Length: 205
Image (tube, rainbow, N blue to C red):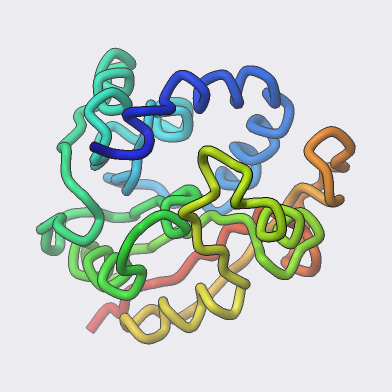
């Protein structure tokens, strides 16, 4: 059973409580979102895929997949490590999923294989080098969600993507501060913000 099968209600409530943060995250992803056929890996309840126009996703949590399907999404119940697609998508989005997978390297590699030549992977995550990321890391043992999480820096993510074959990186960020209740907002190049989106391209060769 997935962690999010147990805590899916708490997950949904978080987005309701911190709706402004969620909207800022959505806006940040949109700045780098390509056109074409997309997939979200770890689609959850469709909180990102649905408003971003992504129609397909994978999700290991049955409860979350059911909610996403109720929003009109097609969802395959599988993990990032087990997914088996090849040259199918123009872009793939992951929002914080990389923090929860068991094998980040295989996850990124599977995304590379699933993309068409010239396709894009967008990895959104809470940066360990940011004040908020350091706060999450320090207190994660007390959290239902983040206790099993692995937090990454921007360089960690780019290095994982480079190893899989991605290049031509872009990065945008948002959310500044060390507490969810006192964040400031603004979409900028990556230099200190907590919520980062790194975009990499699969070779055309």
